[in-house]
Image (tube, rainbow, N blue to C red; front, side, top):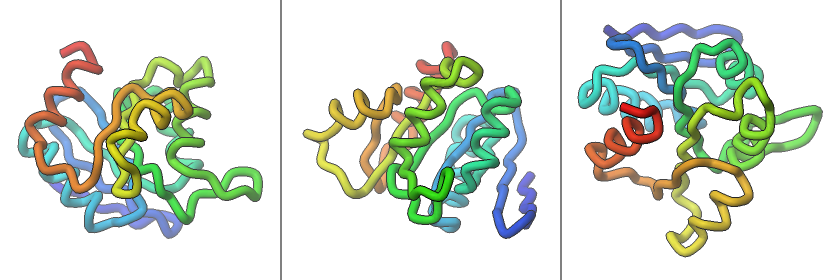
Length: 149
């Protein structure tokens, strides 16, 4: 089932099934919608999509998310009048006691595989994928591993 909610200029796509809840943080709506559909079809997990920082924090602090897939490049993301990236948001979540245990997978089209380790260290994220993601079976296996499934 696909529900699209246009709330306060943000878009939340919810695909429901099973009890694992994944949040995709991505500024490209069509890419996010496609990722959400593929993950849902392959895993049956519930997928939420947003690129709004207040929603990301609210969903994570509210215990509504089991894993986050975070784009590194988020041109519209701002925190306290500063531009922030997915790396910054990941670090914010990982250093907050309420959200530190939520696994985070960084995704980006603008990095080299050789930059993987430094991005993981700076962001405190758990995993890293280059876009476009072509092996969704591997991504689902990573999600399952990080969530203890």
